[in-house]
Image (cartoon, rainbow, N blue to C red; front, side):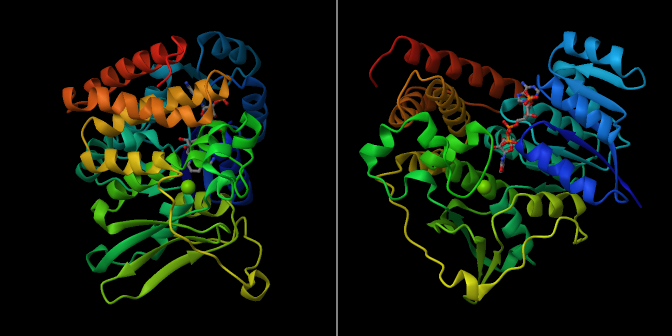
Length: 386
Ligand code: NDP
Ligand code: MG
């Protein structure tokens, strides 16, 4: 039977790859909905190729403009549009591949409507992991990870009760073999030149500072209900071992493959099946010859340490860290601050706000998120040396 699917963020890096996967698996999916921000040129092509019933765009004007061209399609817009599209119970699964905090509310709405989630968006679990996982449990909804590391763990785990620890691999990003000073003063182009993965700009910068790995540790904690003490991070520059788990008897099971996001996307949306679809290049151990592993240099990558500490503290800490880091990353991409200042700004926001803030509800999470973003922007625009 065909699965009904909606893709939030269909114009992004994950979204476009998901549509490539679905094109290969035509007989397995009906595309119910697509959503984008403002890339109307691409969404037009996607509508022509994939014939969704409903499309959500960010702005009302774009929705009206598109409606004139595609009269048979239901166009919605903004936050209400995402709510509308995620309330449609004809969906069997929704792939959440928008970037940023915009992903959280629609994900919760889809969960409340009993729709399974293929989750790429990081902010959903970073900002509200406890609430999201609890709601998913209450509604018997599966949260299927799309990120390659969590997909690897998902593929390796048979029974959580027998797992001793999770081992998350990190490529080390573009600055693994550079000095800390070279990294901190890197240009935007250097930070965006990831050696292994082609991704959206925000996650690529996070991968350069290793914040991305910190976010992944927090996500793994929520997805697999694993204490932080049982989640290790190791550097593995080839990105062939996507992550591993160690069982109680010391046996280690890892998932390997050449770097490609098509495979974890495909696994998440076709789960529990495993299909040929977009097939990875055949894996040749002999050709690969050598796999390297090393410890993380937390002195060089303090952002990873900060993220893990924030995860351990829980509550408001990951919310503060996430908001400050994202604003700082945008400022870096705008040429306003240096790469090394992202850590300093994020750390300053966490130190200033953590002890005085608490978040128990989604509304409080968004209020704190806004407060932190205002504070972070004021730091950046006042050009205060942190
Ligand atoms: P991109 O920046 O490539 O794409 C983001 C998508 O979200 C686009 O479709 C964009 O629309 C849409 N979008 C952004 N802001 C808004 C908004 N305010 N309202 C509506 N839509 C919006 O990101 P990626 O695909 O790289 O990543 C998506 C998510 O998945 C992120 O959270 C990332 O951390 C996570 N992830 C990504 C991986 C990757 O390999 N890329 C791997 C693992 C996780 P438009 O372009 O039309 O404006
Ligand atoms: Mg990843």
